Amino acid sequence: MQADLEIDAIGLLCPLPVLKARKRLMGLKTGQILCLLADDPAAVVDVPHFCREAGHELLSADEDGAARRYLIRKG
Image (cartoon, rainbow, N blue to C red; front, top):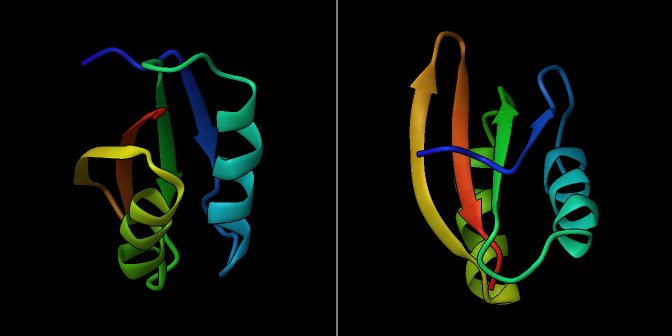
């Protein structure tokens, strides 16, 4: 699946990966996809929670080396 925008949040700790995702999602149109790369262990919980609360769809959360790659469709 092709992302419309990618954010590299590797090395950032909670809550910065989610805050960066939220800011970038505001600039996307409904249905567009954001790819978030993060290695913060808390992101495993924070990203799905953020998506549910903000009305976005978490399409996938896959390992990408030492990080995780989250694909989020803007709701």
